[in-house]
Amino acid sequence: IVFLGVGLYDNNIWIISFMTGALIVTISVLSVHVYSILVPKPVLVLNEDGLRDMTTFPRIGDIPWEDIDEIYTAKILKKKSIYIKLEDTEKLYSRLPWLSRFFIKVNTPKNADPVVINLSKTDENIDEVLDILKAYYTNYKTFTKGGER
Image 1: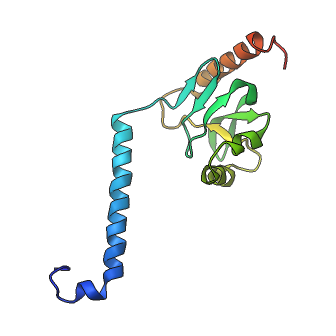
Image 2: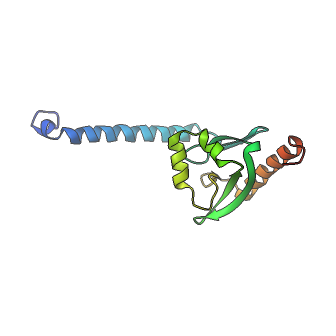
Image 3: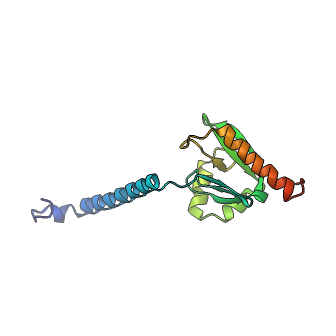
């Protein structure tokens, strides 16, 4: 009816444009969500060089072991998560796009570190993951740095 020339198209072009844009955005978001369900990726990858954090939005990505100062758990905003204290937070921010940097700064509580390992969408136990992270970090400090920081 809208496109049959009954005058609705000419008078409401901005509504039609908005609805078309909203439909395109909705379909895009749904397709990305369905793809992420069908093709799952690991949320946390550990190796000898560091870790890759894919648990939060925006994605932080690779963090070398040498940039990490401490790994700990904390309960902030009624949610227990793993936090990673970096030696130089500005170094992390400098390698991220400005929009990611903005989202991280806005979404990080005042007394918290910006790198959060959020396991709420997994079945993993936070304490077990913390133990594994600390084991990798200790292994790095022991064998790469000679046990000293």
